[in-house]
Length: 214
Ligand code: FES
Ligand code: FES
Image (cartoon, rainbow, N blue to C red; front, side, top):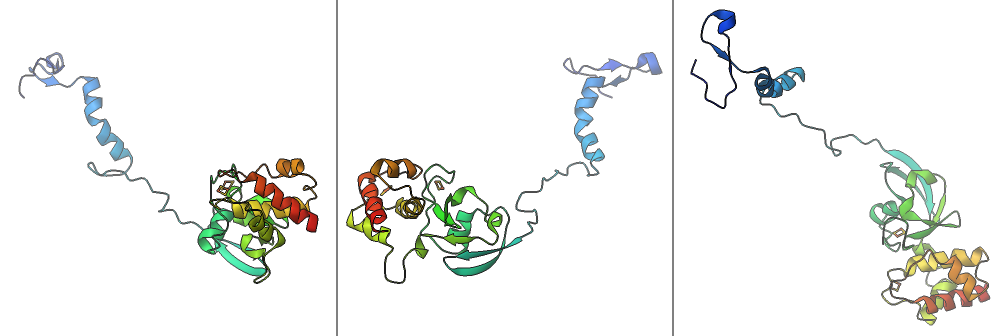
């Protein structure tokens, strides 16, 4: 065996064998063999990298959910992790319901579930088996706009329009709940719907007018 260099911390085994033989220190031996030992214990040949299963590798079982969406019954097999918003937009191509923050802060995704307004981004579709869902696409009666849709146009209650479907659906529920008795009340009960364009005066006026007609 070659003589050790200075920075190789070898110890003589002469005490044991009588020969001038060198061996790695315990620390160096463990450092050098640790990887191989780990692989051996894992049942893998040395040089084989262990691979972690990716989330995509996992088999996802689906769940069946029955919903009535804008009056139309649907029976759907879903990844149980699908949000109600993604079901509507991605699976059913109902793009009127908008994805803004996707975390419950903006109200752009507001829909009605059994008549109650819900942020569709915050809830899983499978939690609503048997529910009736209404989106902005379900408000008009054929060619006839819902009175609140017509009032939004009349009061110029939008600018870019991104928040508008959520505002209108939320406004429909606000009126149905009896929370549209005054501009202040409308503002308070519509506070979960944010408009970055600041079209609030028109939105409040439109809801007040539609509430007066209903
Ligand atoms: Fe759902 Fe903003 S996208 S609250
Ligand atoms: Fe643009 Fe409301 S109209 S965000």
